[in-house]
Length: 156
Image (cartoon, rainbow, N blue to C red; front, side, top):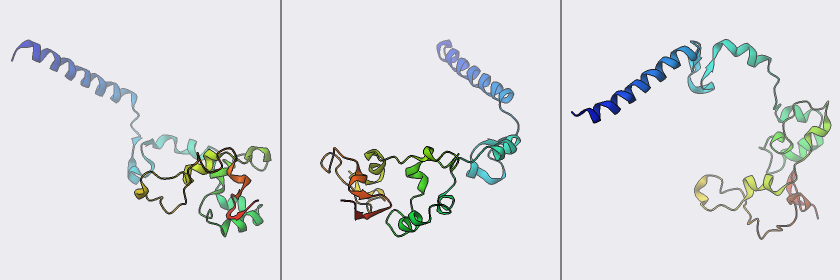
């Protein structure tokens, strides 16, 4: 073969070798998927205690139910029962010390994450009622007419 073929090949091989050498120096020995496979993806076993000390941002719906029993009961009987409270209200980190932190997002975009009309109904989400957001009360928030905790009850 001519040198114009070998030269670029040697350059590519050299770059790959440099990358592998750099990786050997920069990636810690305890980095990988470890005994639980890809369940926790790639991580370092050396910093597990650091992550255990990190404050939990999302608490789960059970955390909310201890103080908001009436809302939890209403929500439990609605089509939105399977949606965690923090999907709409934000992370409960710092609540109840800072009650204003969990201000309700009443924007249409929040509702349209699930209720936008589907272009291809075979996506597995086709059982959720969708709307055409350009025609269905485009100028007002959804919560003006619909109670998010029980959307079957009209607010009007």
